[in-house]
Amino acid sequence: MSFFLLKRFITLIATLAGTSIVVFLVLEVLPGNAAELLMGPDASPEAVTALAAKLGLDHPPLERYWSWVSGLVTGDLGLSYVYSTPVIELVLERLSVTVPLALMAMALTTVLALCVGIYAASRHNSVGDVGLMAIAQAGIAIPNFWFAILLILLFSVQLKWFSAGGFPGWEDGPLEAIKSLLLPAVSLAVVQAAILARITRSAVLEVLREDFVRTARAKGLSRRATLWGHVLRNALIPVITVMGLQFANLLAGTIVVENVFYLPGLGRLIFQSIANRDLIVVRNCVMLLATMVVVVNFIVDVLYAVIGPRVKASDI
Image (cartoon, rainbow, N blue to C red):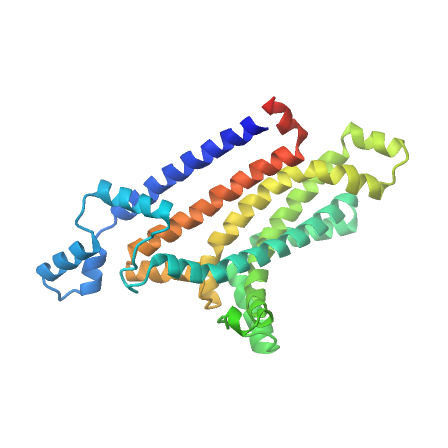
């Protein structure tokens, strides 16, 4: 078990190191620089050069990369070129919107997918199974930004139950904040829940055909007890794999949805920073999202060892 976790941790560190190199190099090859954008097209070359020196853009790439990575390790992400504010403050402020939104969407995804998937598998080839899978197939084909617009038209414009956008802030009360995040969370969860429901159904059906399930039924266990006590745990491994990937997709998917609902989250910060060519903010935000994806995958690997006995056996 310990050797299994050590290997995964080494892989985690190596992946983060490789990701940091890719993120840095990709932004380095972009034409122009932040100094030219901030000074404007009419600025003199001397003024642009002076601002570039002040921002540290005249240093060699290797030196700038090492300075950036050192700052990541110590928590010093530098100053935003546009806002003249520490990047860490901007990121933490926006994470207070993005992370709760992603968690709400993941919770809705999990509840809907497990309920639909288990119900459909337990009634294989029935009308309910076929109908739910048809709805799930339609849900997979729906773009979340288009569904977000439909939710706004229905619940904000027609019924006036929710605001069409904006975020009141957590200081105004958690209920109002959660209410403002509900429609964005639903728009994110629909597609992910449809995918996860189909995978849950397939995993449960596969386990239901195993010999140990027939043995449990032969010993007198009810269908419900067999399903929840034996089948579900063995079917969770592929489901958890997809859930980990989906949570990472939800974090990245907030970029579009946050702009639809005008939420001041990390996705909108990335969008604004790209428009302003605030590369230091873009670089740190992209690296943060990549780190979240890698860490989520590491957690999924740990859950394998907890849930799957075969993973533990492979470590011996």
